[in-house]
View 1 (tube, rainbow, N blue to C red):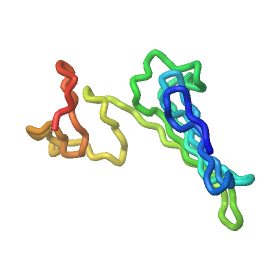
View 2: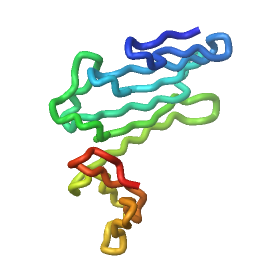
View 3: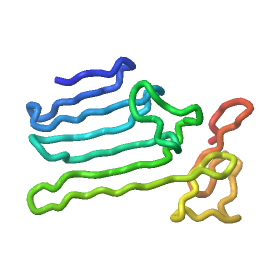
Length: 137
């Protein structure tokens, strides 16, 4: 069995006769803040998301006024299990172009990434028409 959050998303999911439990926490905008899978003791998988650059989106009662849905920080981690060591990695994102697509050191941004008539940038991002709100493509 499991449980649902007030907005209908799965909040707790018991798998394999509750030997593995997945739980999700949400912020005030109902965006997932963390997703964790735990076995009997170790955390099998932990995902954490921050939508506010100042880390104020910490629970279901809080978020920032600048939360536009873009992820600012993300973390993935898990506890040690047997001979496998624990792991934790954080990633920060920045958004600087008018279409608020992510600017990442691994993403190539140059003149060759033009926008085709369907509204899809060559790097794969779609353009949203701010006048009509429609997604191009």
